[in-house]
Image 1 (cartoon, rainbow, N blue to C red):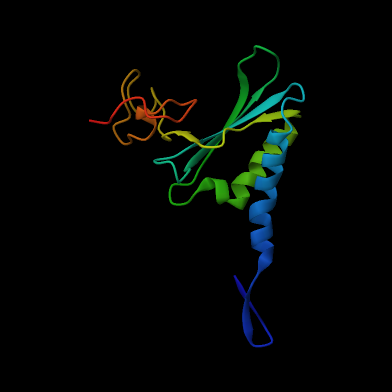
Image 2 (cartoon, rainbow, N blue to C red; image 1 turned 135 degrees about the horizontal axis):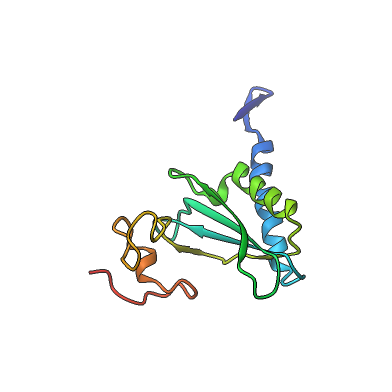
Length: 146
């Protein structure tokens, strides 16, 4: 959005502030490290290492527990990490469930398609090669796409 002031076009910084505020809030919570349970997890998925098209937020209620609550958001044509509404909803979901800690990897882990839902169990995603050739924990290439 552009606002005119004194005949000079200037950017409206309200949207820019909202875009970064919720993302910064998530980053700060993650940097604090373990603060107790419940723990929120945020994972980004995308077709490559530059664009996240899907984010999942899970809540783990106790030590050794599985993800008890899970929400997903998707944006096919833009990077969801830069979407103010998605980041706001992520923050609200985490707050609503009282998460004291946040685990959030610093990279996109895999492609956005789900094994067993979008393609058969045990097979590679037929639409993407990004996540299928990388170790999801280190991000390093484990096999060459042939």
